[in-house]
Image (cartoon, rainbow, N blue to C red; front, side, top):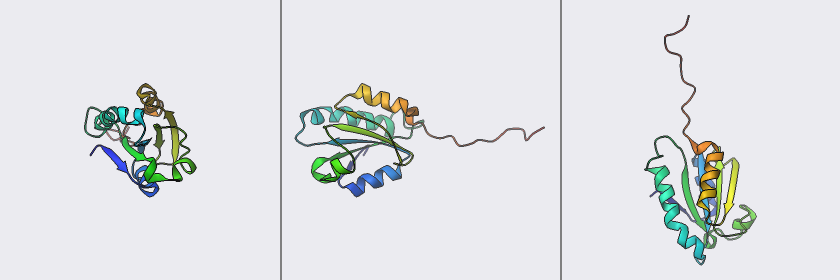
Amino acid sequence: MTLHDLDSPEAVESFKSSNPNALLCFSATWCGPCQKSKPTLMDLARKYDTGEYSRSHDLKIGIAYEHDLGDALHGMYGVKAFPTYVLWTGRGTTEAGRVEGANFDGINKLIEQAGGCKKSMGEGHSLGGGA
């Protein structure tokens, strides 16, 4: 499954720390814009998980609903509107930014501003050995 369903604050924290870059949608089952934008979110998740960006980018996308998170929704994650998209980098150590509302242009810009969430190629080595 390319869009990860996260059903508790512990699942959210595990998802963040298990992935170099994680985009999380905080959603509500009763929210019209949330439901209407979910297919676009699924397409975005597929693009990064198995689609055109899967080889060169390292971004996982999850969704968590208000009824699963309870008070953590506002307390831990500062969600004030639905949907809210938050991008974490550094295995969940840094919030790179957030977008409130179903604004996929804003979400794509947020990903770009975070360096595109590209896979690290490592340090590399010199060819030929030296002088």
